[in-house]
Figure 1 (tube, rainbow, N blue to C red):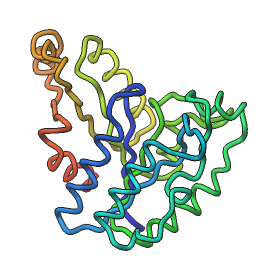
Figure 2: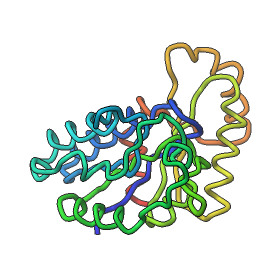
Figure 3: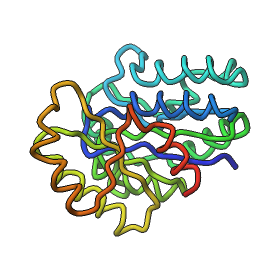
Figure 4: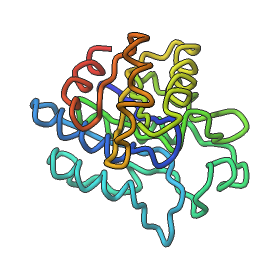
Length: 215
């Protein structure tokens, strides 16, 4: 079985796809066969998966064994409405077995499988599953991507606690953007004082990859 790493975040539009692509490149540079999956994508219009298409294109580039993999293989479930899957599907029961089947197909072609979630940890998928439950279901380690703008202390600690409460092995990565220059003054001091390790997506991707691989 391939090493499974689930990329999640403190909210939507934090940088999961960006981070996933960097991880894929980092592992491929180390000689590992990489694979990717986004089990559920919303906001899919006329069959086009914005995130999934980017991920599939890169996976094919980095791993020749993915040349025959199609978008339906890495994004098995899609909905048109850009909302939580629970809402976008009209509360349709998740076909978890179909996700396991697709995952097993992809794992035959890779050493590391990066699984990108949708939204944050407590995005509802159906009446049984939240996004965080899929990490457990897939027996994966988690990379929690958080932001660097005002409020990141609260958002980061809440999401980290959720992972800890479920005993999910995880690493936290900060995706700092150009407009987040105030991070140094309004948030970083707390993390330094509390001993919270601040690893940044862009600067520390190789370190993050190694830590995740060893979880």
